[in-house]
Amino acid sequence: MCAARMYHVPENDESGTIALCDESMRHGADSAGVYLLSAIIVPATTLPMVRDRMTGLRLPGQRKKLHWRDESAPRRTLAADGLAALRADIVVATWCGMSRDKQERARRKGMEGLLLDLGRRGVSHALFESRGPDRDRADVASLAGLRRSGALPPSLRVSHAPGNDEPALWCADIAAGAYSAAIGGVPDYWTATLRGSKGTVLTCGACGTPHMPVVAAEAD
Image (cartoon, rainbow, N blue to C red; front, side):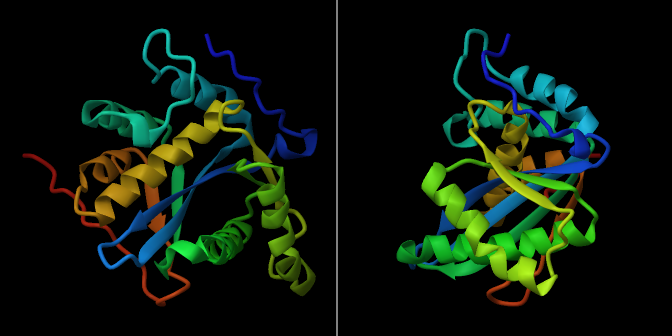
């Protein structure tokens, strides 16, 4: 049984699609890194099922949220398989060349690219894992220009929820972790997610090319 306080989907979102979003950062040996954001797109009506699948991935007695960074290799494989079972659309946005003191700028740029794509897909709600009230407000404020220009449709709602309160967000953490591992040379988890899901890697806003991960070969 999950003790989390489930996020309430507004009534006007129930007939649309929701993108569950989370972040990851990968730093290179030269200190330049890649900031990435993943989005798992599902019908809003399937959120109870997504929550059940995600909470079912926890160990017996585990109370805290599922977090890719804390899991062992076998547990990561299990999590990737659990994400694949959702048969969702996965979208990944990146911003490369990130320095450690420019992470917020990389996030802002990555969010812009991701949300523009979600808007074009007709997604009605993008739900991000909360990083605290101040940073959440900064996220929303950074999108004001896109709203004014009309690039971001008014029908796309952007909000935040704590990861401990919304298990559905854990699937975005799995996708971000699996993709990050793949661009780091460990493709198996990302390959596993794609056995059930459709993955799209957007053109990187910084370098103009998609950071396509290596995909593990299927066994005969």
